Length: 309
Image 1 (cartoon, rainbow, N blue to C red):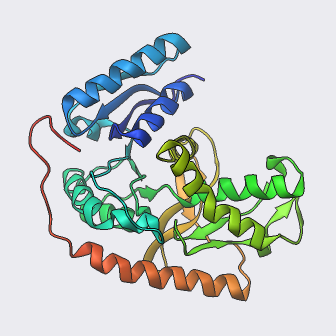
Image 2 (cartoon, one colour):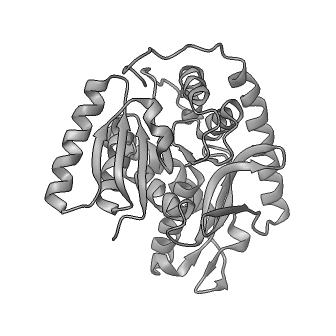
Image 3 (cartoon, rainbow, N blue to C red):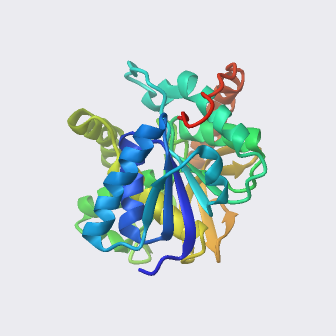
């Protein structure tokens, strides 16, 4: 496709950052892809690798390594940083990074004060860190990637269980990107028609799927990258449509459908039955409590110069 925006930035050269950057080069969504990482050497190595990919694909996207400050000129920035730590949690796994990732996100957010472009946060726990980035930076367009991937997995799993094409399944997963996710079974349709959802089978697969991927290849990466590119196409006005993002709703931040028209977002709630509404409120309460703990973590500034996480 023809490049549609001058530049998109990616912060982080780990597994997810690499996958996101590669997907953006393949997508042809921008003229320039600016990458930064913990060290300039890491960012330069990733940019060189992406340049090889560009040459092989004939992509119009030109990658380069830059300082964080240069990303302010981008139409959108993807935050895929991850502090170095070993996650030993067996439940609420995504919350395992809250204490170590929050200071990094706060430092980055401070450097984006007044930024008017779109910020997509990928770093977990994504609902908490999206809110942290938004409140510290005061940027008007900050969203988190998580529920969009959950929804894609839901549609895939349900399509396979029912033996139908994925494109015929419409439905949402909202709330937390984690164990308090809400499957909106009551409003799910296939070919525009409501149907009984084998909810327990769906929930079982959605619960074990990320762990199975992590166990096999170390981290989920391609799924989040796909969710990022899909969301950017909407947020940058390349096409109109709806995706599930962590966004401000009801005084808190959680996964919710967001309808984009010419790049302008409109969050909304799908129809919920009584059980789903109760589950959503439980997700709200969980995230509100968890955010208070995250907000109180002391700031740890990033290194200066060309050494940025």
